[in-house]
Picture (cartoon, rainbow, N blue to C red):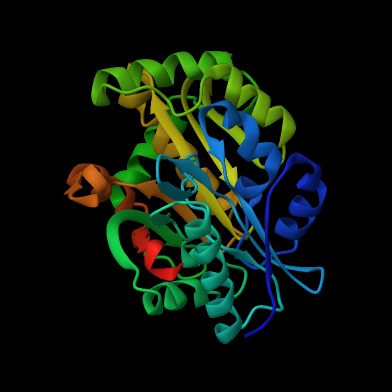
Length: 317
């Protein structure tokens, strides 16, 4: 077996961690410590770095909750982030080393959330195979909807008509920094239709957008200076993720979201590979919001998966 060293992450490793993630095959800016640490006060960090002969082979964002190691509770996806040196057999050793490290820390299980394949720069699903060999089992499967932008099905007539209605009414799509105006609309929509709040507070999203201005962007449909609808995108390179979408009542009637989304898909991000709308499921994937899924599919999106695995740790000690 290759001699590997598992190092607990500490803040003095931030620059090395971030450089590795930026050059990795399956990491995104969500794994940058500047993004991860915005909610550091809510999680007990337990991220690890795996080395061989002093060279970094992999990192895994993680936190501890009770006797459980989670990769990562504050991220949509985490998993083991790797570079070009990773191979299938070596990943098996990396996974074994991480599981042994968790067991030695007195933890009983790992909840693992791999980065979905459409966020990978190159295929890197060695981790899932290694987890299967280690006794891992699938415990959650959420249905998202993504557009393969270079080979997408046609946008439905109703969505194109909605965008035309908005344009004919004089709505114009442009990028905005008015996060406060949009957050007011978003909070009302989420409270009314879902009984929920945004994942991020206004101050958090403003701070993150200031730190990652090329990655976190707000696009609005405006009538004059008034924003009637808005979309927040997380630009992960080859894949763009839609984090939030909301219309006010007037924007809904005029097709404001249709106009924004069609603009993003056909113009702003047309050179990318994937356009990910995010999940349409609740209750750990057990319930599909059929209407929400169908709305995304009308833009040419089709089902892709966000998965979660559970792996026992004590048996690896």
